[in-house]
Length: 325
Image (cartoon, rainbow, N blue to C red; front, side, top):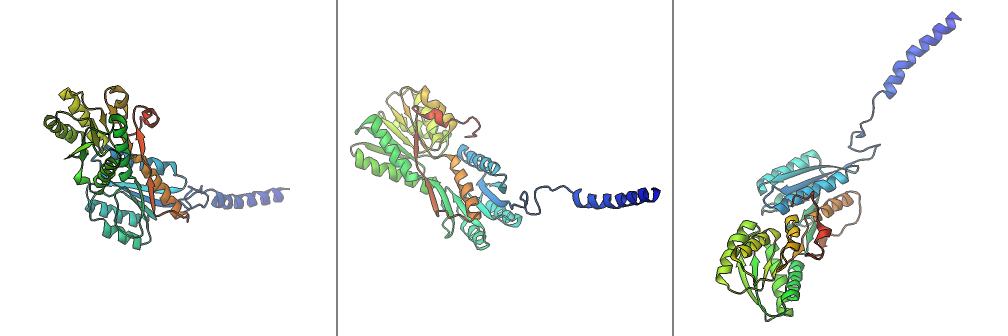
């Protein structure tokens, strides 16, 4: 009996370290490739400009929000930069990290060569907003020309087919302003050729909107509507109108999707405030497309998000207290 017990103890002592060796190391869920239960997580990098404008901040916010929502399927890194040189360096860092796809939102010239090099390295590139002229890049953007078209229709709906409209274009924004201007001017010629359009240059900031439109008000004693291409600019425009005590202006358009601007819409009973929604949340589509490509799904080369018009009749549907823009 004692020999039997001793043998059982010996077997037990041998088995304990064996069991510990087999089952004591808990899986982190990465399995060496970032996935859980052996499922590989795709690596997606996101490149955005540093915050120069509330809309830009909201792009980074929405990109990271979507990346977190896809956390079971992807690993991600998000980088922000102040110029093309810095973004190029961050692109190299993402390549070293092992990015399989990169969502790139450049606001400067000079990104074509590094983007082409990333493509040649087998990385999927999804270009958000401002176009990168490189073959093989996928693109997600709003419809800038249609924003102008819808803005023209909105103005005519509110003031009729005669009157004076000030158009605030932003030459420094390149194709963004050009397309919005083209859509607006061409549509006005078609549906209200007798409307007089006065064009002035400004920038996508409320400070420039205030300064420039204050000067415009002194030069023009009668203005029926303002075709502004950006919500930030429009906030400055509205401040200039208020400070000048003007009551002739019946419409101020905008563009982007700014929460502060939305909240102003019901409080200005004498002015129809409108925003052609060029939502920073569109970047979520770019992140989704990156994942679809890495999963082997077919994706169109270009995804253009239709324009949505927001004013006091529907602004509440677009409020988001968590948005930085």
